Image (cartoon, rainbow over all chains, first blue to last red; front, top):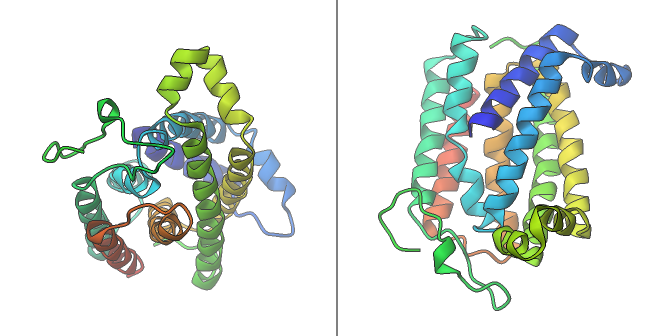
Length: 133
Length: 130
């Protein structure tokens, strides 16, 4: 959650330095790869990806994806207090609703067992701690 | 909201991010199902064995292609609009399309809780656009 949020924010800072990219000047995206903020953003997103792959080997895609959604709140806080973007009350409400959705999904089982991949109880994933998986 | 392009173009780019990311996510999840628990693979073959198992999987390769294209679409969108709109909107929409794809393609048990979560996320997306 933290690496993905920081990574997205770093990319945003970097792309603001690069400026708007038009579809007729795709080469500008390669130039963006030389901006330190973009490189740091990519490094953070790679760290996120390694964690994400490990989580996917333990739990369903429909569990892992929403479980990481608290990152929206981190992004909102970073964009509001660091990038000084304006966030309307409606957008804050949207972020809260998305987080509520995350709450629903994380209270259920994490993994759908298949004949090839039975549940290994020692690797159960739980964020709520209220139900055995 | 600070938009440097018309909102139609921004939402088209967000749509491209979502489709490509969903393809990537489904292919990568399918690859990890095929490979199995990475902890077990690492215990048997070491960290490099686990990395090799992931990188040599064909589904993982196609998944990375999808994610890479989605990433460049994200860079485009970030150069046009605020990160607080593009990042949550594309990720949240990807969550909804992933729920559908995971049910029909990966055969995951997308139960009432997970659909309810999808509705909440959909409502959240609507509010994000206000």
